[in-house]
Image 1 (cartoon, helix red, strand yellow):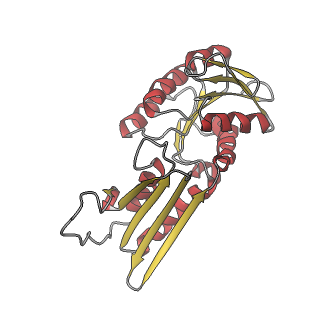
Image 2 (spheres, helix red, strand yellow):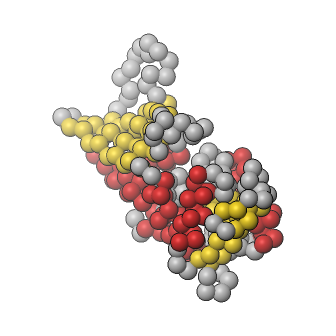
Length: 258
C-alpha cells in the first residue's frame, strides 16, 4: 500500500453499487478514493473524482486496490489487467465460473484478489449457518429474491450456499417429484440436487431463505437486505485486508474468521 492511506479505484462507478462503494470508501478512515471508471459515464464525476473510461485508466492513475462491481464479461477482462499490473482486486461481480476462478488463481501472483458472492456480513453468516446445519437434515431448498434489474439467475450467493451445504453432507433424500406439471416448478437443481428458486421482484434488493427439513421439523435460515448500504461494511473490510490475504480468496469468511 502507498503511504498511510489505501488508494482505491472503483469500476462500474455509474451503477448503484458502484456509487455506494465510492461513497463508502470516501467516508472510511485510512483510505481515499482516487479514481472511478465506467464507460457509460466517462467525463462525469463521482464523489469529487473524475470518472474515466476503463480499467487501463485506473492503472495509469495508480491505485492500491480496485473494487469491481461490474458484470462477468467485463470482470474477466478487468481482473486480468489488474493482475498483470500488480493491483489488488475486491470483486462483487456474479456469474464468474470455475474456469474463471482457476484463471484468476493462476493470474494473481504479484497481487491479491478477493471474490465474494455477497458482501453483507449477515448473508455470510447465513451461508455459514446453513453449512453447519446441513449434516443434520435430509432435505433442503433455497429461495433467493433479487431486484428486477439483476440479469443472472440463480444468484451467486444461492449457488455458493448450495455448494457449501452439499460439501458438508453426502446424505440427501432424493426429490420425490415424479410428475412436473409445469416445467421449472421444482426450481433449478444445484449441487447435491439442492433446489434453488429465483424470484425477481420490483421493490426487492436481495433476500435469501434456506429451508432445511428432517422428520418432524424444519429449520429456516433467512437473511434480508433492505438497503445496498448493507454491503458496504464488508466491502470496506475487504479493501482494508486484501493486502494480507495472498493470491485468490473466495468469500469474506477468511476475513471474518469463520
